[in-house]
Length: 403
Ligand SMILES: NC(=O)c1ccc[n+]([C@@H]2O[C@H](COP(=O)([O-])OP(=O)(O)OC[C@H]3O[C@@H](n4cnc5c(N)ncnc54)[C@H](O)[C@@H]3O)[C@@H](O)[C@H]2O)c1
Image (cartoon, rainbow, N blue to C red; front, side, top):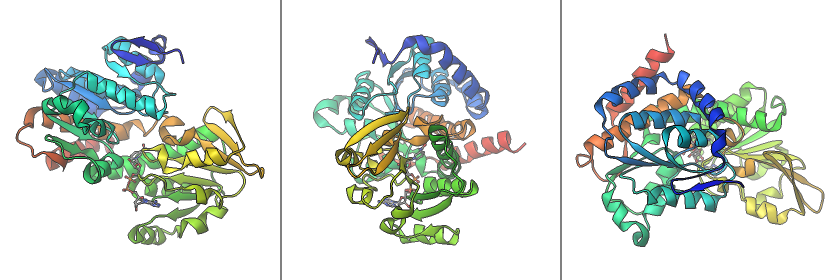
């Protein structure tokens, strides 16, 4: 894989830093909300003395965010997610900002979890999590009891991480502010941002026409709504599947075909999962799909599609384009899996549009500042972003976007 191995980073190739700089320079041009916050933090230094341990996609917008946190006095260690790391941005972060980066694009899930352990080994005092992986590791009493005691608080970005923190993970003795609890994030990022970027990721990866295709969107939450709407806008015939009756009703009133997964799959040209839950597509579902179906995922975890079973069923596997695998059964029936089931908008494209992440990462920054300055005054455990932070961020976005 040709990784550069040193004590304070583990990335693909430090030599890629110049193109990482170009990417980050472009993103910064379009992130005025963070720019204004950065100017203030540079004066006030709320993160002085803190190491922030981050799990978030290592890409250009995150690079601008990291600059912002560092301007406020933070030191940073970061890992990303499988399939979404921009190796050149990772190189730029190490070379220019001396960030401890543990991420490379082709990492497997196990390597990703090892990288998350490396972030925790740098002894952060604040955590910024995405999908709950750092919290999951911190829950291990034997390995991380001491570190847990020194962490003053955390943020969590996603729906998946919020679900894990509230339903599965142990209670922590520090506050975790859930960015996804805000309507600002759900509507601006999940609905509009993910909607457009998933379509972009599929088109860039496959180069196929979406108009006229029958697309099944599995999961009609904030992200699924955006994906379904944007696909319809391009002329796709969209069927929505959701396990919740209210979501089905909403899809119906929006004019989408909706029904059971087993009834929707046989006609699908493309199936997209965006549920935030594992195994939305299981082995039995592959039997129902037609020859040539395209499978992709936009939820946080590749486990939304039971890829392992599909691989076991396949007689042959070959890679046709960088993010398109053809899996063929003995019968000759073909499945095309995009980006190994990793988030298609990040693996196949550049993730959510820059402006959308300017807002989302502003919410993150102000929530982290709230942790740094307000630890001790906040209750422990998962909690929503303070209302004034959400309002201030939305007002800043309005000022920038609605001139
Ligand atoms: N790709 C990205 O850039 C990006 C950005 C934000 C969030 N996400 C991720 O996308 C996923 C969805 O997020 P969201 O905010 O839309 O969540 P949400 O909770 O608003 O919606 C999920 C929907 O999926 C439905 N669902 C759950 N299990 C199902 C199943 N087995 N079959 C059919 N429907 C099922 C739920 O009823 C719900 O309506 C999460 O994993 C989230 O972390 C991805």
